[in-house]
Amino acid sequence: DTIPKYVDELPVPPVAKPLAEIKGNPYYEIAMRQVPHRFHRLFPSTTVWGYDGMLPGPTIKVQKDEKIYVRWKNKLPEKHLLPIDRTLHESAGPPDVRTVVHLHGANVAWESDGHPEAWFSRDFAKTGATFRRKVYEYTNKQMGATLWYHDHAIGITRLNVYSGLSGFYLIEDPVEKHLKLPKDGYDIPLMIQDRSFRSDGSLSYPENTNPPAPVNPSVQPFFIGNTIAVNGKIWPKLTVEPRKYRFRILNASNTNAYTLRLGDGRKFYQISTDGGLLTEPVELTTLPLEPAERSDVIIDFSQHKGKKLILQNTNAEGNMGVIMRFDVLLPLRGRDTSEIPAKLISEEQVLYEHHADKTRLLKLDAIQDEYNRPVLLLDDRMWHDPVTEKPVIGDTEVWKLINVTNFAHPIHIHLIQFKILHRTPFDLERFQQDGYIDYTGPPIEPAVHERGWKDTVKAEPGMVTSVIMKFTENPGEYVWHCHILEHEDYDMMRPMRVVEKEK
Ligand code: C2O
Ligand code: CU
Image (tube, rainbow, N blue to C red):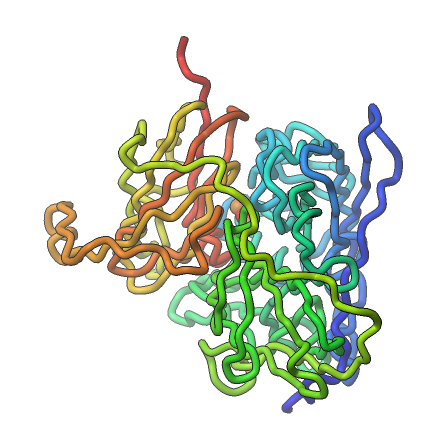
């Protein structure tokens, strides 16, 4: 029952190719298909869902400010791979297999954002209430960044993403050209996901972990797998040259958070956060990643020739404490001319808390439903309650996330990138009594690895986590939510309506 580790070589997802052009802009068609997939050489094959029939999906590579079009096609069967909780939004009846694609971290018009109710079934036979277009338009008006696309269908996102619906989307930025960062074959995305399997090789996702509830299948508050896959292979190895590599690391797990450590604590250099490059590289020995967070890092293997370095997860022990291995066994193919530059980019826009047009206090809380199951909530409201977050174009907003639950929630806001201002501990008991925020300590600066542009932030328990953002364009219907997919589905997601300034 222990699966041998570091057997399969790490696959690198292929880059998607445009099918045609629309008005001179690349046009892609990417179909979701049910396919057999090998997670491990010694495993029977597993039925999964993949974009273009691949897990991860093909990597979409674009230039900053280059417009592209994508037709996301649902070619999945009518029956879902995984058990559906019939009590959740729109899950009572068909279509069971509804999909919609969100480009996580993108500045995009709302009709192309993958709103949860903009879902579509196979061949667009049925569509949800906010469905507007079959071909999505991405303008890529933002910094170069490691983004990712994944399913976002209302009530079943956790199941669709777990089935395999996620892929990388890389925006290349001309400013990077001068930086001599490792590139081409030395620039590798790593998508980390935990998974569990049945003995026949099929994906295992719990039906009901809360037996007193009469609901079966039932959503559960967490999912933690018992193996770790990187780019769709379980505990792979990557054979590398003794030189510098850039890794674009994404935690695409449903619930699980990781703290990465390289071979008992060797140094590596973080160069970006979710939204793009940092102003300068940060030297690290550990790197925490909540679900949906990304970090690009540079690892220099030149001093580790002949060594095998394990990428560890210090949040866990045993099987879940190891992710993959780097085998520094290839000969150097040419001089390594890449660099870890002292400076990366200059700060173009600084957002100051005292310039905020609006400050929102937003509570992260849990209640119980009629079956005594936990329901995670944002500001005590359900998904279907009227929209309350209505930022105005041109405004700078501070959102204070008051976490009164006893665990961390990775909170993601669509459309914009924000900066973390600080986290401040507060008196939880007092707050529960009369709603007053009595701070019990000074504000704590964000950690060194989270001082760049972010679209997902770890809201720590017992803390008020403050983030600042500016809304500059694209009015419309967006969402914000916890990126623990089990929370997002029930019911830690809220609408966000971005509105034009009144003249
Ligand atoms: Cu990565 Cu709204 O999601
Ligand atoms: Cu959560």
